Length: 379
Ligand SMILES: *Cc1c(COP(=O)(O)O)cnc(C)c1O
Image 1 (tube, rainbow, N blue to C red):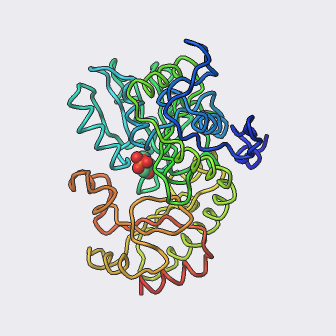
Image 2: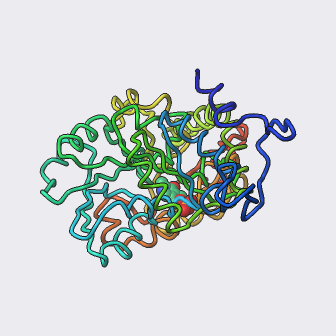
């Protein structure tokens, strides 16, 4: 089945009791049993919910996995994956990482005895030098946030497999429309469905997708035991969002390309980070592992003072100043004071994340209006 058809039909079957074409929101906490232990597959709603089931099937299908496991947020999904580890285990993670992931790793899991090493993985070969006998997991994001670096998923998968470590890919930035890490050898895909999957800035949700049965059962056990489950209304919203993912992503990509070009030609703009440029250091890998280049762009100004960036950040009208990404409306953000404020400044600068860096989540409005808005704010 081609992606567009899959995004619309995956997981959803007409409701057997009414024929409702869209899976209803099963707002219930428990299910009546016909006799002790005799039930229809549903006992208690932390454990099972039909709206969540439909979404989980859809998530598995769109990432070419066998199981999707949903959570109350992207961080809850990340938390569940970390619970696969035990004290003494080591994780190699990319150094250009979502701020919240860095925070949970260093502030929650490091004190519990898991060790983390944050390294630049732009050249996957460098990973091998950092492996130890304790390395159990390699955690990557690609494209990275906010510098849009590209990491070679297939190369990482090979290294992880040879070391019997799990490769986890946070696929939030690319979305399953642009990239399917499980097909490239990854073991686990994580999503903040709050972003492109939901797509309308109206829900917080997370997902883990795997292809291995034993891993799936471990994650279902964690989902049920720890209980960071999403409500049925949120599952419904994500399920609805997925149905238009391919159409939205096509426009995100077109607009992203137009705006990246515009910024690159602008006399006041210094660097533009976007993997679609032929001279992006890992463009060739992006072109192989992604279907297109997406709508996430970061840039710096030639005037590198914070005030210059602040002027742009507070003078756009269509681009709203806000955290998050992946919705239909365009957003503008300042990683150093917003999404990445939880990473110490020296650590940020060491990783190339300038104080003046501006990040765009290009929405699906008309590109001309977006360009006009940015042009006026930069001028
Ligand atoms: C937003 C985000 C998360 C966290 O997801 P929440 O839904 O906000 O908990 C994790 N990874 C990436 C790349 C994100 O952008």
